[in-house]
Amino acid sequence: MDDNTQLTERKTDAIARRDETRGGRRAMTPAVDVFEDAQGVTLWADLPGVTKDKLEVHVHDGNLYIEAKAVVPTPEGLRLQHVEVREPHFARTFMLSADFDSSKIDATLQDGVLKLTVPRREEARPRRIEVRPG
Amino acid sequence: MSNFYFPDDLFGEFDRLQRQMSSLFSGFPTSLRSGPLGAFPPVNIGSTDDTIEIVAFAPGLDPAAIDVSIDKGLLTISGERKPTAPQTREETRSYAQERFFGSFRRMIELPQTADGDKVQARYADGCLTISVGKREASKPRAITVQ
Image (tube, rainbow over all chains, first blue to last red; front, side, top):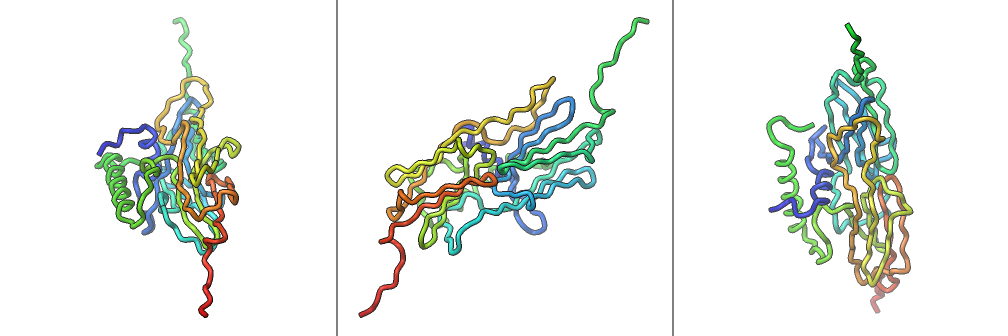
């Protein structure tokens, strides 16, 4: 089976790419974009249907955990007929190296997209070292 | 976090295979227009006695830029998702770009019972919920035995 017939297919496959087992339940791995510049790392994660109170971002033992539950309001007596999103849980973990300042992580959630900014420690930011004539 | 022993893609393959198998054998015939598995946005469809409910999982869109239309029982959801724009400061490195970007279009065949004049669409928390009413005649009703 060829996975590469369509570029977009491969990209969105990442949404449910690897089911992780956490606490006995299966969760989807959200698709992410990760960029780094001199200030630190910015991460975007797709979490459709997740509200602020159902999202938990925490740092433990140098790992950054993103855990969320999607809630889509549905009318009573709904019978599902076609299902592409099975699990309403999202979970993904990243390792944080020591040069990031985990106490200054900033998180915003808008329209189901989480934006995390992870700043570098002041002393870990790139500096230009002045070369003086000897 | 990638597993040290197995490349991520192996799980992706298993997962994809499993989803394809389950969709083949889940008992619901798929439509000719259903498109490839894993197309953006993923869609769940269900129905109640009065409505057909469609949920498209499409985070990070401008509601004004989502185009929902119905033509002869065919519901189309289309739009464009912009790529993440990092603040173009001095050198920016990209480590992952898994999130979908570009234009998308999903077609959903509505059953005969759907009433194209009774459609409501709502976008909240990255989910587009579309509710299509059913024709009066198709609603379940009790038949009096004479």
